[in-house]
Length: 393
Ligand SMILES: Cc1cc2nc3c(=O)[nH]c(=O)nc-3n(C[C@H](O)[C@H](O)[C@H](O)COP(=O)(O)OP(=O)(O)OC[C@H]3O[C@@H](n4cnc5c(N)ncnc54)[C@H](O)[C@@H]3O)c2cc1C
Image 1 (cartoon, protein in one colour):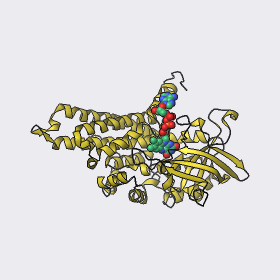
Image 2 (cartoon, rainbow, N blue to C red):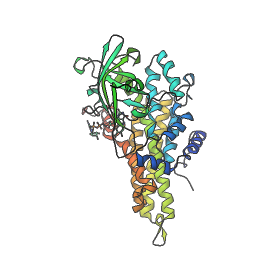
Image 3 (cartoon, rainbow, N blue to C red):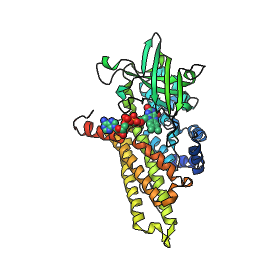
Image 4 (cartoon, rainbow, N blue to C red):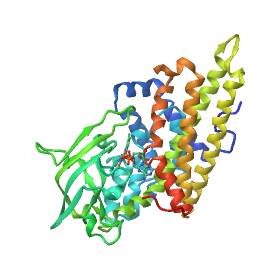
């Protein structure tokens, strides 16, 4: 019998097998307990990073493994296909890219080996704000130069993993919106040391968890007079939005790979149940009304996966891949959501029971149509930037 996802030659078979072996130590019972208690999956994150997976994309010269993006995608896909959830730590794979691409040599030498060795965690990136939402250019958190420092004030929302991270990438406005020459300029990126900023009796940064429908360790971050050394500015002042955009293709692709993993888990789980569950003296999977949705989800997932692989190959070849990375994220998140719905339906009432893991994965995979970018915004990008339709915003 073909396992979902084995119909085609899979890339990086050894890496995949090693990730699967690690994930086998963290079965559904582990993830259910974390989910129920809204606990950070520290044991998984530690094992995963100690195995070097979070440093997959850090070049060897800075202590990482220097793997291509396609390999990082395979790693995350396998975590999700095993029933786990890499969202507790996946961001470190791509947030470090901001330092790697735009940081000075001194910043790279200072931070990347520490991150690669897991002595420091860079799990958090703070872009979203309560009043700016998808419209990043309207963010109001400000950073003002004062001698050798910047003074930062403002508020971020949905800053995931901030409580479990030593460092945070922060996007702030260094030139007021009405004084910039170009719409996309005036924002800058800072590397914040959360250990210092959250310490003391009057911390300059306070972090407040947000309880959500899934276990995602997401937070609100309040910044009050935070003094950051000017040497923590990444790249040039005013070019931060461009730097964030530069990192988006990698982020889109890695999230898409997680969606493919989720979809494969849902399809395999539904297939097994449809073969085992007997109603009216026969397996429910003998009914085409049950078979066809599983087959359809499989086809949809394989098609989305082709786009993920195609976009990753372009990325790794250093070629432009904005449209492909966005389409990969769109198609993969739709495939995983369709597979989730199918899997729940295939299980009937049991799909709602916690012990089957379906309702947990269902909640987890739903996120990807909203974050890190919502489906509408991908469609707007394709319509307006790729197809040349009139701009809507
Ligand atoms: C669990 C979770 C974790 C997250 N983690 C992080 C993180 O670590 N760091 C971070 O910076 N952010 C994070 N986010 C934020 C996430 O990136 C945003 O929620 C997302 O970008 C959408 O922004 P919004 O929620 O403000 O929606 P809004 O911008 O308010 O949009 C609401 C709805 O309107 C639609 N919409 C808005 N404008 C348009 C338009 N012009 N055309 C068509 N439709 C439109 C959107 O598609 C969306 O469906 C996280 C969010 C969640 C839920």
